[in-house]
Amino acid sequence: IAKEDFNELLRASSVLQAPDLAIVAKADSVDIRIHDKRDDTSHQYTLNIGNNDQNIDCCAYLKTENLKFIAGDYSVKIL
Image (tube, rainbow, N blue to C red; front, side, top):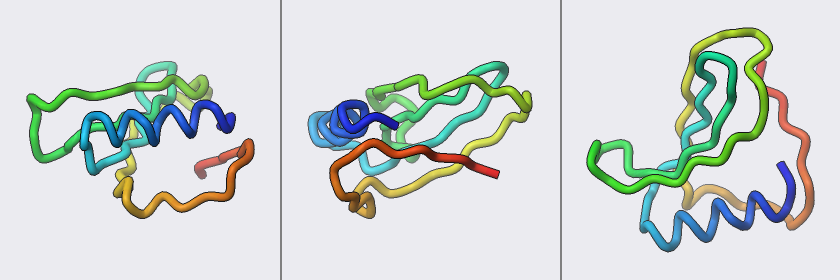
């Protein structure tokens, strides 16, 4: 994830006041979604981060308040 993309996710979380970050693999793409998972009508921000080469559907949730990173680019692999 590029530093600029990560900063954009943090800004979206702040603007939307959304507490949840979801990493969603569905069909042929992997996205990061900022939203409130308890409110289906909440606004959301979605960023495509890659292809779903394994064609596996899954979703992992993180609280945005727990995202503490040193500025920089990251290579992420979810197994």
